[in-house]
Length: 117
Length: 111
Image (tube, rainbow over all chains, first blue to last red; front, side, top):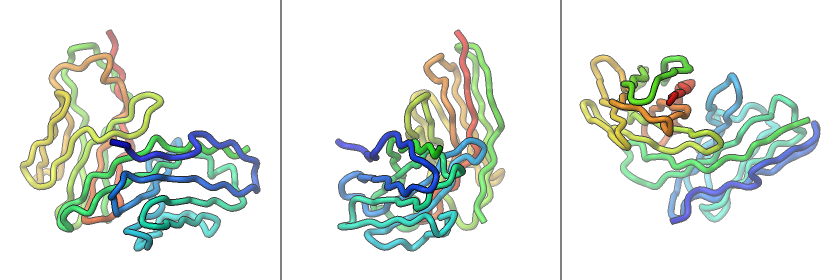
């Protein structure tokens, strides 16, 4: 079946511009996560959605970052007024409901490589 | 809070050598433990997982045992291949929260 998809695969933008990154989770998965992978920083958690609500936004690095999820499916991560330090690979993952006592496996998309010039 | 510590790389081995990548963790509650692999130019793929103490996860010849007493989840493979060259990430999860990842260990296998 189809996995997690992300678009675009690559995005080059100029400092100060806004960008939107899209994630299509695996069909039926209720949980959706955004992470950022950058050199020297490893994998950082950004935000988590359960359905359309975001119970955990603790990883968003500044108020320039926002995300939404509609229809319990597609999610968009928006970065306003991009800065060079925003350059990274942005990864999306989804997981199913599962049992609350165990952590569901998260399935990752291929990522969007963002370069801010 | 939760944290994962894994050995720094790169780890360079010859084909058919034995592999161990150490991973230790700190967590509240009873986490699930994961190893993910990232092949060159590709995304993160789940390699194996274990959800409770003494469970052994295994896949593609790789194994890891959830050791609660030593808070460890070391990755092992008896005979590595060139195709195993990748970056390996240890991770833990509690409930439905985000995963906490280690810094990753790059494995290079030479023919």
